Length: 364
Ligand SMILES: [Zn+2]
Image (cartoon, rainbow, N blue to C red; front, side, top):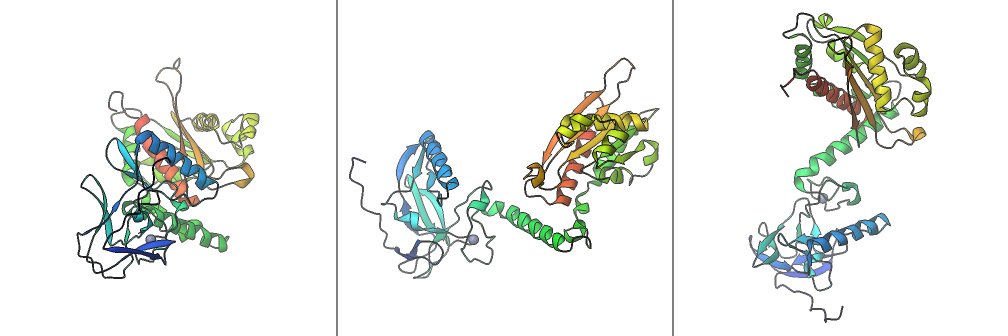
């Protein structure tokens, strides 16, 4: 830089010292009344485009193992502030999940202001307000009772708690494998079954029809859960023909007519295989609507699967014998989901899709 760098900013309210949380920190030099503008957050004023570029660079550094601290601040619609400069003393302020300061726009700049009365000697902190993306990259050691363990904006912290609780339940399930089913170690995923959707599917099949639509279901990933749901509704036998749970390749080929070599090539996980399963079950059970799910309910290192994912298909018989079957397929991913949670998510998605696909023409 050709220009001489400005002197570091100072404030009568704050002094720097080693922090117990992270590196250096700023501390109250004296009692600070609530609402006081403690110190301005200064830095290099840069365009949005430049800001995006620097954020990309930071991500690359982070992936290479650096700490990847974030100092970019939105100043207004056109400019950001890059606070990663030696003269920005406010950059030393750490994040806390239960902060005593907040950021505030005032006098054309960004200020760190006291959220409450702060006693001399207290470490100053504010909520960095990070988004949910890459939350695992920013562990939090703020020590607040409400700390979720990661630096994340308050409104998003429930997601971390949920992901951690699910991971814990999953671990527990593994240590007692064979004795306890996963669903007993989780906060009842069956509680998330949407009863209203089951009734709507029934209505789509029966309401206003002399001959009801008939449903047949082929399941791999959801392991009979869709069949179990449909079977819960009163009068299910009027429209539900039944289903087949097919885990193995042989079962998919022999019972559902899936193409063996195609299925082998993708471990039976693809939209095309889901469609073949749906067609097969509709044919085998003489239904006018076929539904199928296939996929990975949990990570599968043998097949290079880190994040669970699934495909579903719904096929609907045409009204006339010359028409073509209407095919709808979709994909569901389950980042950080346990096996059971993933199965429930897929089942919920398929129920919603059935409601959409079977909606009367023009009602969507
Ligand atoms: Zn924290």
